[in-house]
Amino acid sequence: MNDITKITLIGAAGRMGKAITQVLSNEQNAKLVGAVERFDSVLIGMDSGLNSQVYENNIPYTSNMKEAIQKADVIIDFSSHLSTEEVLKNCIDQNKPIVIGSTGHSENEVQLIQNASKRIPVLFSPNMSVGVNLLFKLVEISARVLQDHFDIEILDIHHKHKKDAPSGTANQIKKILLNTLSRNESDVIYGRHGNHYSEREPKQIGIHTMRAGEIVGEHTVYFISPEERIEIKHSAQDRKTFAVGALKAALFLKAKKAGLYSMFDVLGI
Image (cartoon, rainbow, N blue to C red; front, top):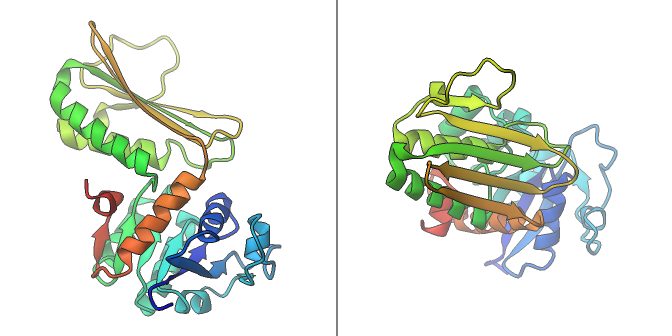
């Protein structure tokens, strides 16, 4: 039993929280010990297993973050970037590693994450999917090879409930492209409209966002020249793909020293 990793979920009743609860219900090497929700949630006290459409697990939703974090070996946070400061404070106070999967962080919140990583192990990734992280690496390789000879566009598609745009994944793709190609934010354009555009700037990177239906998540990166087009695409068909990646991250982080880690570290790429 000592080898079983104890997990506390922050934002446990959200879409990702329920997906992780489902994955943990069949996991041999980890178990759920805490399920944290907002103090004003109508779900407080409800069994998190039943609400996640698995068996009754006797882990009720609670707003007592401190107590729930105390029970765990690793914390997984899929709540909201607005909770980041409170979650990090509790993890630092109790010396607990944390996997952060929420997106939409401000520069100040990112700085809080970086500061926390000097004291505890922090894994921060805009997307926990194994496939998406392979996409990140393929985009980096492609940009390095193609350089300035191809126009680049990014398409980000998600469900209508998503609150940030572009997505954290699209922003990470942008960051990879800018770093690899030595470009900056002034080279990025977010959507296009109207009839006042001149010819496309050679180094411009376009980012386009769609929000509709219940699409879990799709990202496509286009490299286009006058002679050919290369598309690198990832489509998530089930939210569990992110849950499986988050659990891999938690198991990886358990024995690590303080520092800032990514899914590249988990996957060894």
